[in-house]
Length: 279
Image 1 (cartoon, rainbow, N blue to C red):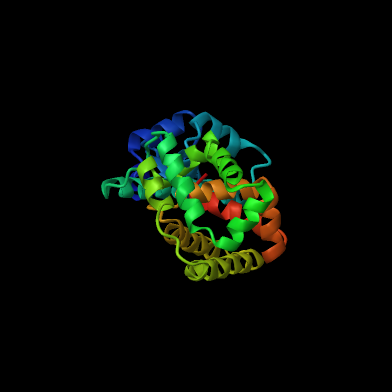
Image 2: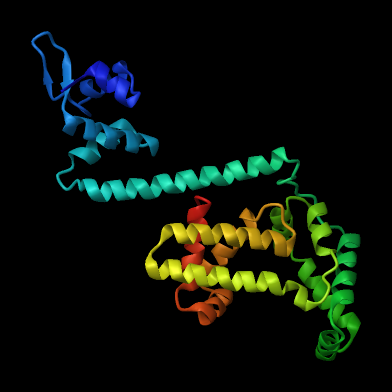
């Protein structure tokens, strides 16, 4: 048996709080001594631990009492649920810490200045200049002229949501412009990132098959690093969360991914990304 002071020392919960739990019927002492001192056995300590987990989830005390008094209360299932919620909370905080670290390094992670026409024209010039002659000729034939094809490209840059996403991914208009206008070189220059992406997606499928959360978490970290290299990003959190949304919406990109890596791959990766960032 442990005294109220012993329990307080072990758990870090104040004696006053333990007394209050007793008063509201949330955690009654196992027995009272003749002098009125509260004593707790191991079962009571286990119940207190469960209460502490609930409190970490910010569940009100009276709601915790109702849950634990429910005759259908399944301790093991509740612990699994608590573990899942706490992991999400931890991961969300890890994502916030990652952003704070970037800000401390001088990375602008929140600027919403819009692209002006000069910016868009520069991006169009760069896109056309770095396109292979074969691809450009194909698009000119499709749209009737280079000017018509340029107008088509400009319509994409006019999409406010797409432009807002660019700023969100890069942290500022200036960072987005800097990345977009970088020399792209030949297609072979992207092969290392493409090969790495293929390796990562295969690891996701291994994690899915083995039901291995740690392997999936490692794959998300690798994917974030690969995206940072490939797209010249300071932080890959926002672009990966957008990728997760698209995968979980089961649209064309998800279909293409499942076709290449196996049924359920896109949904699994989407959930793994959201779990990692605590969304």
